[in-house]
Image (cartoon, rainbow, N blue to C red; front, side, top):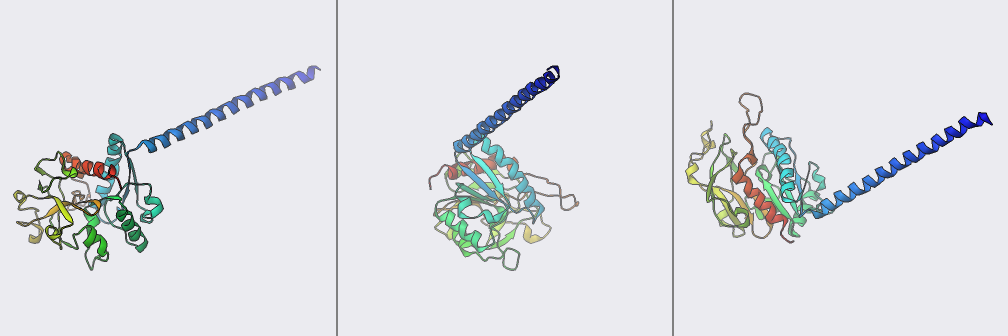
Length: 294
C-alpha cells in the first residue's frame, strides 16, 4: 500500500500540470480571438483603404522616394484613420484584389501586362480613386517604357509622351491654377521640394477633360542647373498637378528625390514629403478620393 502513495502523488501532479497547461492554451486562444476581432474592427473602422504599387528597381532617386513614401503614408494613415498597404507585385492589379481598396497609388512605374492594364482601367471606370507620382506617367518610344498604352497616357492622364526634364533636381515656385478640394488651404504660390520636372508632348490646356491645379510659376526661371543647356528651362508653361474631370484621379509630377550621384555615394540629399505645404496637397487628395463615393 505504501508503494502506491508516490504513484498517487505523481498522478495528482500530472493532473494539476495538465489543468495548468490547458488553462494557458485557453487563454492564448481567447487572446488570439480578441486580437483578431480588434484587428478586424480596426480595419472595418478605417474610413477607406489605400494600396500603393511600386517597382523600386530602376533609379536610385525613385527608389529613395518609394522608401520614403512607404514610411510616410502609414503615419498619415494613422493620423487620418485610413488603412495603407503597399505591394511590388503588379499582378495584384486584378478585380478581386482591387475590390478591397478605394484608392490606388502608382509610386514610380506603371503596369505592363495586358491583364494588369485592363483590370486597372476597369477599376478606374467603375469609380476607383488614383494618384500617380512622377515617373508613373513616363512614356517614351525607344525606351524601356514606350508609349504603348493609349488609354492611360492620352485619355486618362492626357499628357502623352515624355518630352524633356530639368536637371539637377531643384526647388520651384509653384502656383495654384484652379480651386479644387486638392488645393484647399494651399497658398497661391509656394516653394516645392527639390524635384526633376517633366515636360509632356500634349498641351494639357487644350484638353477640356483636364483641370490643371498646379503649375510652375514664372518666377522659378531659370529652372535647373544643367550641365546640358536643354536641362535648364528659361520660359514656358509646365503643369505639375492635374486631374481628369471624368475620373477620380490626380497626377503629381513630384516624386524624384535629389541623390548624390556625382560623388558616387547615392545618398539621398532631399526628401519629397519634408515639404509641408506640398505634402498637404497629397493629404487633401487622399481625403478627397478616399471619402468620395463611387
